[in-house]
Length: 241
Image (cartoon, rainbow, N blue to C red; front, side):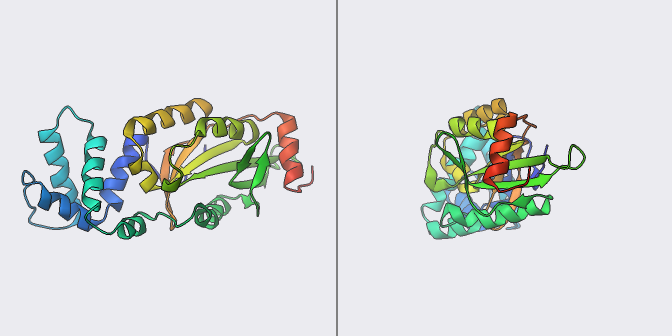
């Protein structure tokens, strides 16, 4: 199993990371200013602001889901700020294609060779990022393949389960990379189902911003693609089999 960035453990760990490490300080200040029940901290560091908001939520909304309530506060507050500022701070790319160079570099750092183009997966799926490495410990002609599907906030609710099923049929390791804003702007229950669906298929989830891989929400399981599918990828990538 490949770990990219820090281990975020699960979907709630991803929310906590975004709130605590990425959320713009100005938005945290706005939340405190707009809610009189939150005492103003003596220090205005990110950690102090986060801690005060956390205590406010747990004290006043003990039966509510913490991630849901914190997300609501963030999204309500950012409406008063420039959306461009939120996108910039959370590393939301202008286009999905902008994620590809950094993702390819990340896989390269893990010992894989990124392929230059998207790769068609029959019958009608295209893998956004594909990388490979030769596994001499298995056989001089054996390649291990990694496929990554990219998901930004602009894409909304995709039928990712179908795409993930195709990825799992072809790649030794499959991942969906989502951006922090994509996480926040989808409903919590949708994200929970998305997590369970990927877990069922053995597909990992990465939290990924345009400037850096942030962490692994769910580690991918090692798949065992059919030999015919492995040969297909070997041919598509122009590798010697």
